Image (spheres, rainbow, N blue to C red):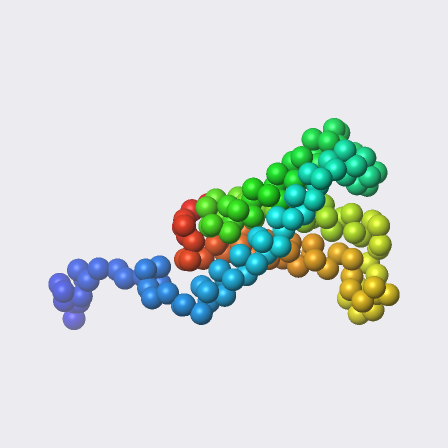
Amino acid sequence: PAPSRRAMSAPYKAMDDGGSRMNVPAEVGALVLRLTVCVTVVHHGLQKLQNPEGFAQNMVAKWFPFLPAPLFWTYAAAGMEIVAPILLGLGVFARLAALGLLVTMVFANAFHFLFTGSEGYPLGVPASGAYAFEPSLLCGAIFAYFLFAGPGRLSLKPGCC
């Protein structure tokens, strides 16, 4: 038998319409993670502004000699570590901010690997008790998460870039 007219005219309904109920624990967890990593990173940018010439010469020029104008890159990194955490923390241009911070962490990790090596990672026990690259690696992973997942619903612009 032919399908009834009613069955043929039923509107298509997506399995996940995006407007479903909010998973409050997951969203609070994402908010706490977002705010914690952002508050933690800001001081690194402020620290660079304490002695930008010193950072430019002792870090950028020494460890990344392929980058022209080390002072420019120092101010770019400082600006990224000050402005992007504010944007990500608020959830405004969150993915773009997370991308900039992720790139910054890639350079931080590169420095640590150049300076200290892998320190036996992942099973080694460094003399200092922690891998030198550990904070930048963890921050980078968190920024990668927000780049791909977005800021979550507890943000000023949850659906925005």
